[in-house]
Image (cartoon, rainbow, N blue to C red; front, side, top):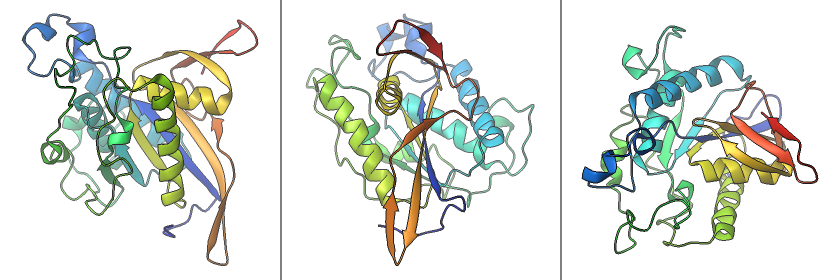
Length: 267
């Protein structure tokens, strides 16, 4: 376990964020000519939403983000890049709408790493078989993706939890286990740091549903599931409590209902 800077309030916080607006949902014709139809980028509105969400995180939550982990899919990389620009901008400009408006970044603010375990649910529920790679291999040029982040912010010393992509046609249960295992593993590896995990709707849904004990039926673009646990360091060892869902961002873009009733709630 790492014993870096400790959170002064004794709590570790994790934000699980969905990516922004993807092009294939806005312009279905994009699929007809796309070289990688299973890996759609964001539209401009999605970039703006991601940046604005980053600004909201920066201004509303009461803790710093120390480390960012991101799915290798391009929509998540672009989302993370915009969020990181908002979190790391030297000057906070409430009128800024994207990373293009950020003139200077404090590269010491946080570190970022690509994590295969945050990938989309790899089955025909999430990705239509006709647009999935014919050989079932989802390939990524990691160095090209890392180049989309500010120089010096990628932490090359991080050993990914999942060394390769999930297998095509993983089960929903297997995907749920993957996300929950990843959260626990990363949290235990960096117990004194607050983490932002940029992922897909299924990752946010299963995280919020599991830790709040509810049925999640809608996850908006850039929605955030917030988790918190108490972490105590004593005599060189770390003891951590259980995660609980907290809501410090006001509307976090997740709609859910109780498992025992049909009452619907928005968070």
